[in-house]
Image (cartoon, rainbow over all chains, first blue to last red; front, side, top):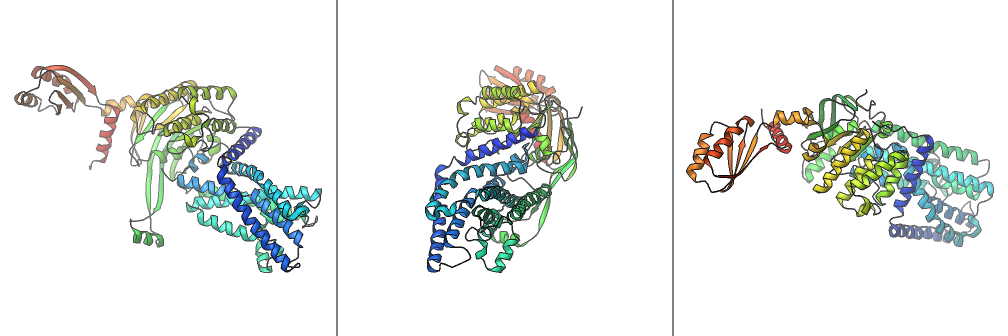
Length: 275
Length: 338
């Protein structure tokens, strides 16, 4: 009788990478749908930019940021947002409805790593779609999109990686909610609304009224977009950078661990739909 | 040696909200917290040794799929003990997954949007399947299940039968020590079913894979399993060899008689009168074709002799009960009020 030994760490990483790659391949299947999504997002981003253009045209001192800083921030925010739109929840909700979670649960990679690998696949495709946004953004904001320095570029890139972990952590919690509620659409919409407001996608948090800023400080969403954008553009000081990166890492790891704890508890009471 | 599967007093109870049909009942259910406990599996005990091939059968809702999900670690039992390959499945699901293959007939396990070949490569990496094992299992699956012509077609464009074959191949690629196959032949034509059965037999011969097969097609069981577990409403109705099952429950015989000339009413009546005390049923399919159902196999010789004496027989055959017929009768008996 044959038994396969457990994969070594290197083999497990290999499996993770291949799953990420195949997920990316899957995403690329629906080219037209992706193009429509990209165009719709580009349209929304352009509207945002035009609104802020108009705000600064009417009042050049509308906020603590100059017009150039503002436009630079918004384009980088859009860019990071595009890269970090992960399909973790939508993919999972569909699988919950069809009872396909059963298949995910019998993979040797482990449930959380299967989700993380698929999210990595999403990131790979999104990075590809982010390129035209950067190019079009250059037309709007020009050199305002460049990193403030080499160090800022490194810090910003590390921060994007950590923002991915934070985004995945939030998604993983939504996935657990889907397990509990058997349909996570309500939580998903709540997450989208919170993300839209508190991530700094529509405006940097310094533009927010103080009470909202205080709320945002206690939520993970700003670390998905505002933190990497500020670090890249040098809008956060070098002294602030270690603390910001640590906060991101803490949120990312904390959210994933919290999701994993809930997952273990949920496994005791969940049911598989569809027999 | 640690058995492949050990189950002792296993039970699974679900809680579900009470609902009635209709809009107003739905609205009331929305506001109500009333729920009920449903026992899907109750006090199940059995042991499956390594290398065995076991058919798990039962009517819809008998608890087969729930049992398989507890054995694979997908569901946590409400009570009792379960071990698969020596580990508690739901506690060590990842460790178990490395040596377990699973097919859920209704749930595709290969990626929907890319060709099956790509999914097979993914599984090779994910399970870290050694090259020599993969070479055998992949080639065997491609050849035996005739996957070659659609390996490069996206799975969403495949027919149900083609997809099922890919799913089965995917579940056995890593030559698992134990394979749980829940309806692996659903939607397949007879020829393909035959190939699937051959594939299972070959995998078992080559790797000693323990097979737990859940199916409504009892020909799958006849072809691949030596042992049967029959479930009814969450309880074990029978656990033993397939042959023993047939001997225990297949008491009857059927005589199929082709007549050279039509029998008149008095001849028929005389025959039926002569065999009146032998628990036989006469079914005239056509004036030239008679089926005689004997409730006891022992009465078959007497019935045959009487038929030959009274009728002008052109051809005659005696059949034992098929597994399907026995199981159907068993289900009916289990359902009948005591």
